[in-house]
Image 1: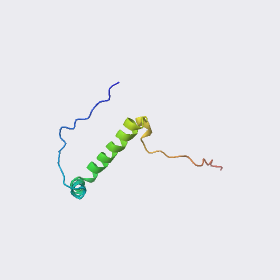
Image 2: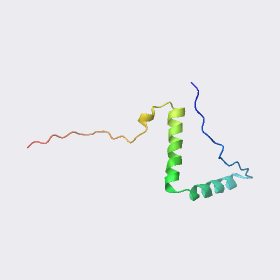
Image 3: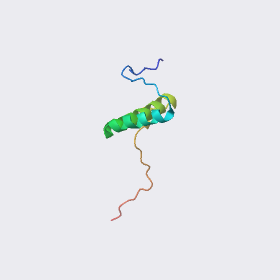
Image 4: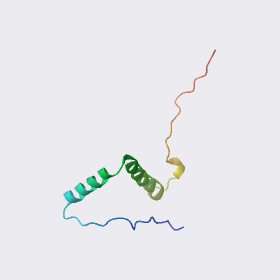
Length: 75
């Protein structure tokens, strides 16, 4: 089964002369984004890694809570 590819035609290609320049550029670009856009980008990274690399089921990528105790009302 072929893995679908994402459209990356809108990506900007830049050349940097040092790692410091690259880091400064990355920070400025992230700061331009809204909080929602940052969360969306972070979620896409998590999703792509867990599903694409680790082979996890997408249903596993949700908040989960472990039940630690069940208490019965006596009364």
